[in-house]
Image (tube, rainbow, N blue to C red; front, side, top):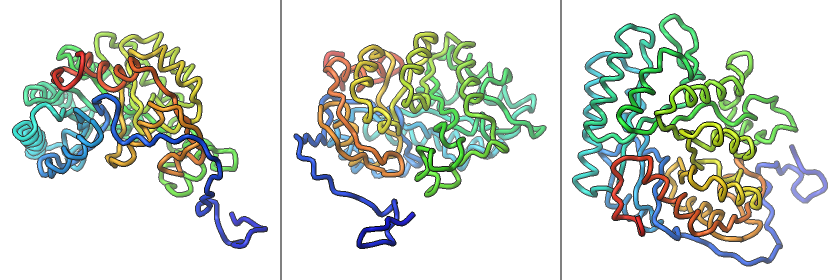
Length: 365
């Protein structure tokens, strides 16, 4: 898509990076105002990480606790035989022991489950037992990946919906054990829409074409999300953290209605900051109203990207860049959240719903 009438007529929209001439106050924030819990991080090999370097980065950001959602290696999630289940257990055990022996209380691990052989009569028994064992090993929650509802199939080759009744014992067990379920279902709704000039995610789909969800292959976005919400409704004794603002950051009013309806549902802001930064006035009001239900999350571990999170949440700055153009070609504006809302977002809400966090790491807790 060349720009005609300029010196470089071969330039594409992907190359176009205009330098703003706007002069407004700037407040670059590299250290969060309060210590925080990042409830959405992925560290694939915590048993081999350079923890000294990782802790130094966390300290520089004022991150008190990192929640590693990848308690079991993704490469192990689809292997069904007992030998590989033992390897998964060893991986989790090694991760927890390694981090606790070096930096106690700074890391929390959520476990994962695999769906290979789903539908086998023994699958549920083994999976429930695995969750119980993992909690004994130190896991503080369960993370469900987006493959459930999208690509997971049972032994007959049929898609497994998020609210498949055969999964009910999993959600019930988490409620019984007192651990939250952080669940990622579907993806941004525009991934299902035509890849045309009206699609707000056109640039992302151009650069990452595998993210497009062909309606001839995948179930509709609304169907997957409704299945997820059905699970929340069906299991009121289990705490669910709906990842990525439930992909409703572009419709906070609808997300608020869902929070009103389902008291056991929480949410987090990982990878959806761009939605908040373009609607600062409404988003600020929304955060104040739902201050007890939202947690801090980032997703991809790139320390310098946290600066934009802090700036959006803590300042009243105007018209500044997000850190990834394909997610937001628009500018960010600060929400200037009140201190008590920041405290709840950064750590107080996490302390309430994730068991075993060290309260001494946080002020007034």
